[in-house]
Image 1 (tube, rainbow, N blue to C red):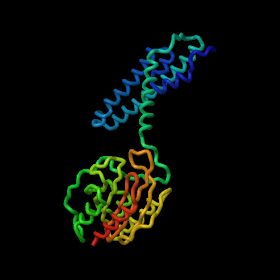
Image 2 (image 1 turned 90 degrees about the vertical axis):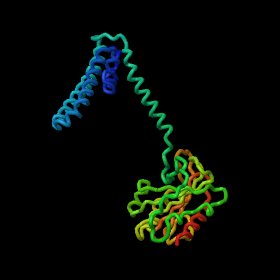
Image 3 (image 1 turned 120 degrees about the vertical axis):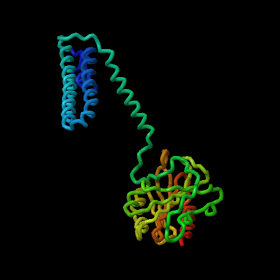
Image 4 (image 1 turned 180 degrees about the vertical axis):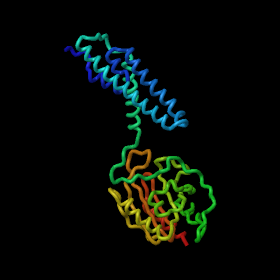
Length: 311
C-alpha cells in the first residue's frame, strides 16, 4: 500500500478541529459540511437552552443533552471519515490532488495561540524559589495622606501612634498612609479577629515607583491576647528557608525580627527585606522594608520610636 496520507494524522486533525482532517485529505467541501454542522448545532443549542430554561428546566436539560450527543456524533464521524478517506487514498480507491488551502487556517490559529501563550509566560515574573518570601510592594504610588476620622480606642487617638516626619531621617518625604481593609489582611490575622487597620509608608521620594526603597508601618488591633499570638505566628511565617531570625529590639510586650530573602513584584532579582513585629496590649505593629539596600538599624530605630508612642 502506497503511503500518500497518514490516517492517524488525518484523524487527529479532525479531533482537534472539526473538518481539518478532511482538508488534510484534500476534501474541502466535506470539511466545510462537518464544520458547518458542528457550528450550527452548538450555536442553535446555545441560543435555545437559556430561554427554554425559564419555561421548563427539564426541557432545557434534555435539549442540552441532545445537543451534546449530536455534537459528539458529528465530531466522531468527522474523525472516522478522515481516517477512512486517508486509507482509501493510500489504497488507490480515492483520488488525492493535494491538501486543501483551508488546511492552513487551523494551523495559523493554533500557531497564534502558541505564540500568545509563550509570550504571556515570558512576561510573568519568575516563580518564587522554595524558602523565599514574597513581599507585598505597592505597584502604584501611595496617594498623598489625608487624615480620616480616627477609629475609637480606649487609650488614645489611633493616629497619634503613627510615626511623623520628625521621627524620620533627614531627606525622607512626609509619611503617607491608607486604610488596610479586611481583604488585605492575612488569613491568620482574620482568624485572630483583627480589626481593620491602617498602614503608613516612608520613603525618600514623595511618590515612589516600584523598585524604590519603601518602609511601611502597619497598626492593627486584636481581641485581648491575640496581638501577642499574632507575633508568635510570625515565626512560622518568616522563619523558613534562607530567611534568618534576628534579635528583636526590646519593644512592646512581645517582639520578633527577621531578615528575609524575597522578590518584590515586577522585579527579577532577590532583595533583602527586614521585618520587625511587636505587640502591646491589643495593638499589633509591623515594620517592613521593601526594595533595595534596606538598613536594619533604621527599621529598629523606627520600631523603638513607635513603641514609645504607646501609653
